[in-house]
Image (cartoon, rainbow, N blue to C red; front, side, top):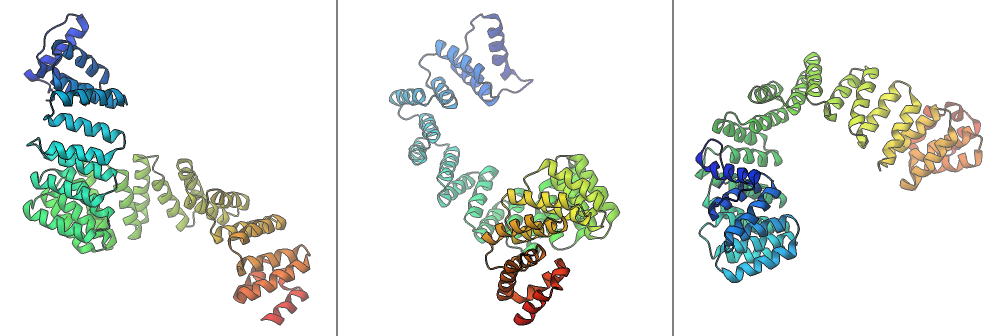
Length: 462
C-alpha cells in the first residue's frame, strides 16, 4: 500500500520517521511495517527501507512478508547468496506462498537464469488467484530469452484479464514488430478494438503498423480515431502530422503539429517538422522562423542546426551554412553526414584546406565511400599537392581496385609530375576499365590532356 498525503494512512509513516529522530522505539503491527517498507522502496530510499525491515523483524521475527522485503533488498544490492539462502529458508516455512516463488524467480532472473525463473513463476501461477502480474513477469523473462512468440502469448493473457493493461499491450505489439508480423499485429489490434473501441493507445499502435506497411490513408484514419478517443493525445497528433507529410498535405500537417504546441509544452520535434513543412510549401520566411524556434527550444538538438544549415546551403548563403554546420558538429562530432556537408560547404567557399580536413574526418569515422576518396584527391589537386593526391588514390585503390575514376586521376597526376611511364600505365588501365571516364583528364588536368603523348594514347584506345 502506498501512503498518500493528506490521509490517515500516512500516520504510521510520520510516526516511524518521528521515532527515528527521537530514538524512542514504538510498536507497529507487521502490516504497518510492510506499508512503510513498500513506500521507501518505491521512493528508492533503500537505507530507510533497511531500517524499517530491521525494526520490523525485531518486533515481528516470524513475519514472512517482512523477510521477503529483506530478500528484495538483498537482490537489489547484488547480495545474491544471502538472498538465495533466505528464500530457501522461507520456502521451507511456507511452501504455498506465491510471493516466495516470485522473489525466487526475481533472484534467478538477476543471475540470468531466465528459463529457471519461468519454471518457478509457472509454479506460482498454481498458487494464486492474482495471475496478471505473474503472466507479465513470465512474458518479461521470455523477452530476456529473445523468445518473442512465447512472450507474446503471456502478454496477451494479461490483456485477456485486463483490457486496460496498456503496458502489456505495448509489449505485445513490440513482439509483433520484432518478428516482422505487422499484418498479424493489425489483426490483433482490430480484434482488441472490437472489445475496447475507445482505446486511444490501440488506435495509435494500429496507425504505426499501417505506417510501417506504407498504408498511409489507413494510418491516418487510425490516428484520427485515437484523437476522437482522447483529443488531448499529443502522440496521436504528432503521428498524424507525419502521415500527412507522407501524403504531401503539408498545411494539414502543420495544423496537426501546431495543436501539440497548445496541448503541452512546445517540443523541438514539432517545431522542426512545422519548419520543414513550410519549407516544402516554399514559405522560406516561416520555415527559417520555426527552425530558429527549434534550436531555441532545444539548443542541443543537432537536427535543428542541420535544418538551418541545409536551408542556407540550398539558398546559396554558404557563409551562414558554414556557421550552422559548425554548431551541429559541436553537438555530434561523430556524424559522417555532417562532416560531408561541412566539406561540401567549404568547397563552395573555396576553403580547400578545411574541405580536405572534413573529408579526412569522414574516413577516420569509417566512411570509405569512393566519392569521399575522390573528393579528397580533387581537393589536394586544387591545393597543388599532387604527391599527397597520389597517396590518397593509392589508399582508395585498395578498397576499389580496377576503378576507372581512380585510374584516370592517377594518370593525370603522374603525367603532371612528369612520371610518364606510370601515367601511361594508369591511363591504359582507365581506358580498359571504362573509357567513358576519359573526360576526367580534360576537367582536372587540361594541360596534361593537351600533351602529345596523352593525345596519342587516347587516339589509340578510343
